[in-house]
Amino acid sequence: GHLLVLGLDYDKNLKRDASLEDTIKEAKDNNGITIADHPFYFEGMGNYLKERDNLHLLENIDAIEIFNGEAAFGLPFGPLPNDANKKAFEFYKMIEDIYPDVGALASSDGHSMYELGSSWTTIFEADITNFVPSLKQSIKETNLYNYRKDKCSYFGAVDHIAKLLLFKAARKLGLEQKFE
Image (cartoon, rainbow, N blue to C red):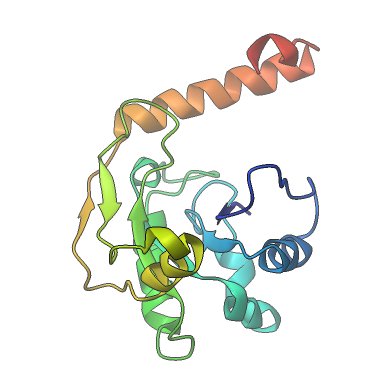
């Protein structure tokens, strides 16, 4: 699933195609902030995290995205469920007492100009002199009750999906370099 990692050093890149467990460990070893992006939407990790044997992974997740502007666009079938944000919200409510250090965020994927400013969560001001640790603390202190804007980004979602389909078709035709 998609895992957003914030706060890595400028020249640090995580290994591609590693397992979720290894990616979380590598992110934490490099002082990264980990956020489960759109956990019940396309390529989300929500169902994986919900499995009894995987709940312990939440000990190393800093936040769950409980609302994603793009995930508001769904279909009644396939990889784009129309209730992805509702499921993320309910999952957070289910785990918030068991994992009180996991924050709850609303955001957008930011793949297009349509999304910018559409969905966000107010966090406490981060200390610029100790930025990553204070940002991590601010994210952990967010919850369902923080001020946030949950606006659907239908145009952004359609734009992103169209680009994903175009890129997948280009990859099959050996033309992916033209679209990177």
